[in-house]
Image 1 (cartoon, rainbow, N blue to C red):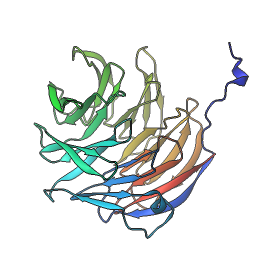
Image 2 (cartoon, rainbow, N blue to C red):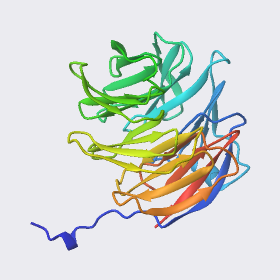
Image 3 (cartoon, rainbow, N blue to C red):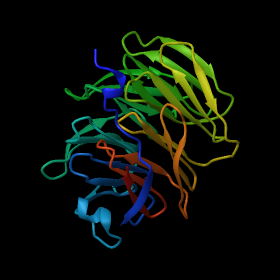
Amino acid sequence: PIPDDVVVRPRAPRKSWKAGTLHHGKRVYAIAISGSTHHVYTCGSGYIRVWDEKALFASDEPPQVQMDFQDHQDCVLTCKLLPDEQSMITGGVAQTLTLWDLAPTPRVRAQLESTGLMCHSLAVSSDAHICLACFRGFVEVWDLQNQVLIRRQELPKFGSRCIDIAGNKFWTGGEDTNLYSWDLRSYKRIQHHHLDYEILSITHDPSEEWMLVGLRTGEMVILHTHRDEKFKAVLQRYLHYHNIKFAASGTFFVTTMDETLRCLEAPSLRRLFQVEEPLEIVCCDVSSDNQYLVTGSKKSATVYHLLY
């Protein structure tokens, strides 16, 4: 066996540097950044804008591409890069979920006809075979490879704002303050946690061992996916937006609470750095190479370079 002190563990960032601003023009409801190309995708009403790496270090660079929706009333509220970062799926106020090919140039690969009017959140399995789309009162389970709807799973009407997948389970939560886990094979409910306050975000760590749940009050609940272990990080503050995003390295995660951006070490929860933005942060993402952090707000996105 290799001694512990010889194992090189990935580090967590010491601080961040504000590198650039991406002018989307409308509210950025969803955002994604690729770790391989460092392209950023800002999503909202009417279009998605794609920004290349040189735009990350500027404040006046135009987008590389603007992808206009066929129906200009459509609005993307949620987006997920697939694990290979060659494709992305988006959902929101639209009749379809859209699967995009991103390379060599972005284009629509498929429109998945959904049965709901507004998709609140998406989750993609680590092997990119399954996509879950969360609507009010139900979840759609999609086979992404064959682009087929496998199942429509009924959920509590006010318990389906957020969704995430970890292993063979998926987790849902929303306004009714209850966090549920479901078996992805039998679709039976496995766990139920009453968390007292409205759930605004759910995410898992890279090991798929822990779930982090962001509440309306600013509190963060950390649960083990298999064992009956639960911790709570308390911060009493009423929020409009509460996002949590784990870094692929597993050594840190980012949480945004309205205008406040915090980076916390995992698993110690030690604060690494904090940034106050002038406007409420609607969404955020961390590149898979752990180099960049991006946030979306009223009309633009902000790019932070993470310093180690």
